[in-house]
Amino acid sequence: MDLVFRTYRRPKRGETVVGKEFGMFTGGKGYNQAIAAARLGANVTMIGCLGTDMFGDSFITSMRNDGVDTKFVIRDKSIGTGVASPVVYESEGDNSIIIIPRANQSLRPEHIDAASTVIKAADLLMLQLEIPIETSIYAAKIAHAAGVRVMLNPAPFTAIPAEFYGVIDIMTPNEIEAGQLTGMQIDDFETAKAAGRIILSLGPKMVVVTMGQRGAYYFGPSRESHIPAFHVNAIDPTAAGDAFCAGFAFAISQGRDPIEAVYMGTAAGGLATTILGAEPSLPTMSDVLKLLDQQKKLGL
Image (cartoon, rainbow, N blue to C red):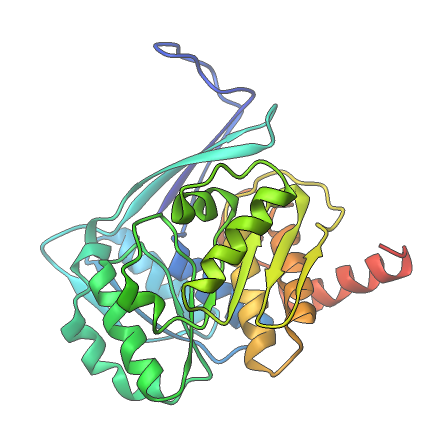
């Protein structure tokens, strides 16, 4: 559950500032990506863990309202639903997020076994790192063995073992995570390109480094390309990366060209910045197509 604070500027050490706005929204990377993909038209099954508290009830209701299959979402009575506190800094146009995983850490490999049939039948498995990494690796191995593409959004960052790289088809780090994965400082296109190439060499077939207002960089086995960001009235960047992942994954699962998929992801991510909060900001396919059409008419 995202407890979102919007403020004019970042507090200094020991300082209290009066904020501008507060909101409480269902969120979390896996949930955001599931909802976003469903709104774009994908047939989505969520595998995860919630508490039995009122926050968990809100998630189940929200996912069902958006048509996400929740039969593999377990409820843990011993620990509460995960919470996060995104703080949006209006003057800087970015945010910082504190995450307390709670029930997310209760998702174990044995829970993945129960969902193995649906994983094997999927077009694509989307993974994040707000659950134990051994659980993500276990799910990836099931998908990989069945010939199902595996996409990892390596956030929040943790070191990726070699065995995990070996079963990942697509990675979508942002520029900070790309730097953490490679030990590099990413501060321009050249360093982003160098990091993307290193990550690609570790095993994935495709890598997309997202760079916020600077767009995204795609790296594939035979080409690479910069895709610029879309022109939107950005208010809150929370969930923009998740919307990008959903748009890109849905396009790839439809067999679209990877560059076209990056454009779709970039449009979805851009739209997600125009509304405060994670879940409320996730766009529909009609929203995405409208933005893509507008940008095409403007020659952008």
